[in-house]
Length: 411
Image (tube, rainbow, N blue to C red; front, top):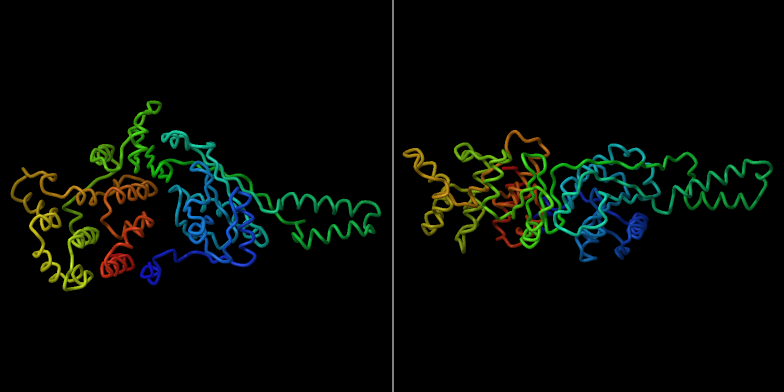
């Protein structure tokens, strides 16, 4: 991953945490029901997730109390606008934007000497069946301050009221109580510590629950797509919901997405785009073994690309160039079918969200399409970094260089 780090493509916007902030972070972990971290320094993202703490705990979802109860931690106003690197739901980024939009000023004030625990409550204590994810409707965002600061504020105000009553201003014990509270928690008299509950409405989204599930509920009929085959088989037994259920690898899924005007394709148009070139080059790279030239040079140099293309066996050559072969044949006759010539996964990779979809839905569908066919390195990096990172580790160094150049230059 060093290559990605050097190119600022690997968690480059994390916030460093050390000293007093570690203590506050640990208090949040304890308040949320988790064990403290033993680390003296680490980094966090916009929702308070830390890759180092996750590694220490050997649990990527260490901020979850079960799949139905995710949490967040805010210890710095610098978290505003920062990426959420491992969202449990695709709407987690939007929730954090919403939180800072409404409570940004108060968060900046509170985090001077306190930390905030976030509880994302969708009214479900625990999941029991895979289609329980359909119960997601509204997410209530509750805020909890460490050290019971709101109660401490009430106690300070009560002490001050007592101090101002009668001759209590000469009471030395009362003086000491006020001083001790102020030294420990600061002067809370004029601080606004009231972070009222927020409501966030969900629509279509992706969740990591049950091995990964897409809930597409804003279209002709609700569609639920499972990434995990075991949970998919369990879900199709459930007759309580009127929804269409698919496993992500089912070819029928793409047909249904096209029928419901969720995705579309135009091979003649896409073949002239940078996106097509990225996909074709990545497909070509899968067949390059023990080459005389670096893979990056082969993919970037048209002469070398043709040279190595012609060295492939005829089956692989036809697969890499299947789209262009199909379009050439189509010019002479319309009897040819896409399925007879174009490689299925290549064809799937060339789909895109339907142009009529809202921007937020387009992002979700891009993520789904990337997971169906992982062939566009740029979109793969954009929409599913964890899967991209996992695959990236296995690549030839020169292919890594090509991918980094492609992503960095957005080409």
